Image 1 (spheres, helix red, strand yellow):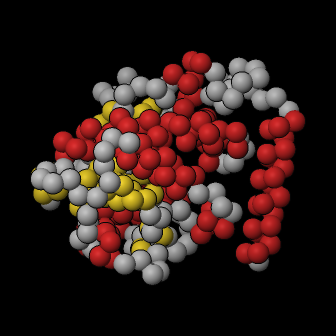
Image 2 (cartoon, rainbow, N blue to C red):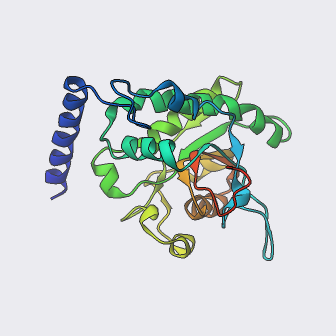
Length: 251
């Protein structure tokens, strides 16, 4: 059954690629004719990244129980054009967005590099960049967009002088955590390490990468697992953040 699903997914991806080549498409953000991303929508991703953990449920600092916040940087609010673009990219309906988001991820890594330097005290340790886990269905279909994003972010961090290693070692045994509700994601034991992962390789500074953060439950579950193995989870990088009610970060 998995082999058949993978074959169907491959045929669908090939068809999508051919369609993108043969038929002119509009801007993925606003629909402007015959351009992958128009100048206005491109500018939405060229802002300085903003810290947004204070607007999440599970990543903001809390006194009861005592828990430090996890720095999270995002480029855009998850609404309007940015939301449409991320969904098209993740769903593989617009494979022509891959180079665009690779460039966005690289720039995000460059921008966060200086912030990371200020957070890490003492001699700079190697930085391990880890993509948030994808469900087995997405892995079977080779729709590992977050892993692609993590490689781009890692390259950007490396250009700022950090020693960077990118590994895809976080797993979910069944469905993706994004399919769960916030409380279920928080209490779920579905985040684990990939087989043959050496836990000793995690004992360094870690930066998590995901496409979107809403409540922060997925990143919080990853942080808990990694800390159990001795990792120093220094922060997280995402493309977009869902604005909360009355958001002061995304006005």
